Length: 167
Image (cartoon, rainbow, N blue to C red):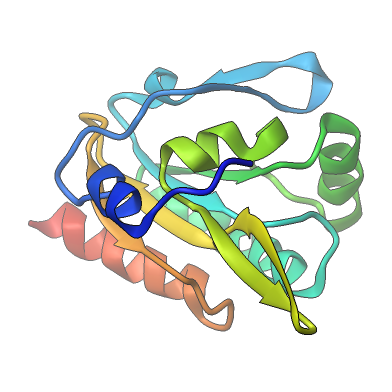
């Protein structure tokens, strides 16, 4: 994963701009294209890795709120560098009702400016920064949730979605 500078990231993600389109593989040898959801709201969340505590909690929180997202006319999509087999196990184990998209090499995350320098136990590495975007029906970024803290996040995204829909 090639790092992006802070200037690159700020020029990539801005509310009001068109969300970069992508086509990514999901489970069942299917592919999903962001532009295929035009006309609907999309809660697009990027996360680092399947089966880790924070990512599992985030996925389960979106799962538990998925009916409310659907009632608001939105689809939830999760994106990580994991491969289809990993997503299949993760989806099956936790009963996730939305697609998890495979971003090998984090190329889509990089296009969104979300590959950042991270640290864990004193070691530094490049990885996907947990971030959620609300994409409006026209395909524009309506709201960005950077550096997500998992607790309460799905509810905050749903609240923001409802507020955006009302305006």
